[in-house]
Image (cartoon, rainbow, N blue to C red):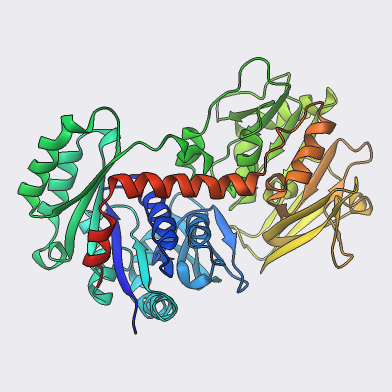
Length: 487
């Protein structure tokens, strides 16, 4: 029997589609259904390694977790990872397909629909219900030709649609009614209902508004969802979430961690467990800002375009700030692309990130990196040099070597040395993501910095938040009607 499916599209980006789908997946899974999440096309540099050795958007990995199943490449068959303002790496069913500028991608999309439908069919074979998430806005009719992300997919797969509007940003009546107005009659015919998300205040005050939307669109009212305050505890899908989470700790925080936020930052959910620690203040250093002089640790995050982000670091003078922090005896940790930036040289002889060539690194580690087309995607376990175990993953292109590799940051479970540490132990680089999500690693780092971990189980906390989100949506969304509308 083929699984039912229903799709959730939005009036715009960041209206809460990913969060709502994650919550609905957990709620329906808790009811005993076999639910699978699916997003035909995603654009994000926040990615996760799958059990089948590929990569998908971090949001779909979270949704898989909500379903209590391992993430699969079929849950997000097309992933676009921005490498510049106008171009992106294209990942298809977990593997790098190539790179394309935005205009070029519009012509490529049609060739990707078979892979999208193949992945969708694979999920339907193992589920009772598939919850599909659209991308961006359903009303971007200028991109409708060859669309695989929203109405193009819905029509091709014959999946009914629910449209989500965000009342928090204002104009939700206009955005929902306007979406109906710009859709073709065939596309609009796929829509069965609507949700209004992120409401604050007394829901009774917006009942007339819900009725106006229903009358103007002819769509069924499926729920008015109040703002879910604990959303900040879950990994954000894209860099917009970085700012939403930028909440400073009070002055009594014992440790200050400074993190430059560069244009092509990736896998920034590495910060989430640190932000949850009560004795830690994470300061996100935006372009035009400076690294605080009293920072204990500077973390350079991963990057989808390491050479470009290294250039941005220098243009804003943050390289000088990092050098000053280093002279004061502060610690520096580079994760993935950040590790590559810390070396003496970054070589790109094959033009992986742009024109072939080499650039100087920050020279805080005596290593060099050669960028390569081959991508390492693997879950890893091991022990850091201080003897603390870890569980994480690698997702990178390039190989790093040099004298400081004689002092590895860690040893993987198979005995392979990983990463590098400076002679004085103050600077370290590693390709391992997810270190701070491991409670053992996080506690060890905080102890080194003079603080104590809050003693919580980070991973268990994510699951607890998903359960709270499920309860929230059970209360405010007509789940029985959504199941009935699914085809």
